Image (cartoon, rainbow, N blue to C red; front, top):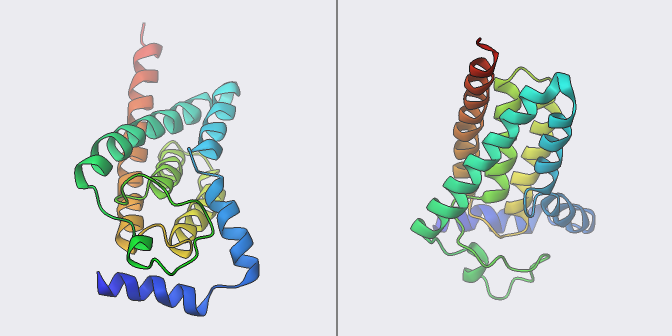
Length: 176
């Protein structure tokens, strides 16, 4: 825990500035309830030629919601890092759920890996936003570094699974 607090404190000491104090809450806010990722999946579902990719992303997000928010967070119940630094002024309202894994990060990387596994070139710009989202959670002092790492790994697993589930479902629908 001391190492992780050291990383978060280093970010606060060396990277905190007015521009990032504005940008990081905005970037994080794009994924507060998975909005940007749900919107992307919905748009892809509406485009006939992208429907399989949209289905992959939608399945990945559903799997993420179940595993991250309904199973892992309540089961693990990790306290957030800002609780150890009461003197720190947060730039966002303090989240009320448990810390591990980072739900913002897991949802973002779930879509990245679903897009990659389904062959969409959109995985690259999605990766840029996912990485910014993951960093924002550290910058805002609302997640431990291992929460973010856990979110990346969980996102990778459910993203890949969502793509495989969509692929299997679409194959089944194509068979006579």
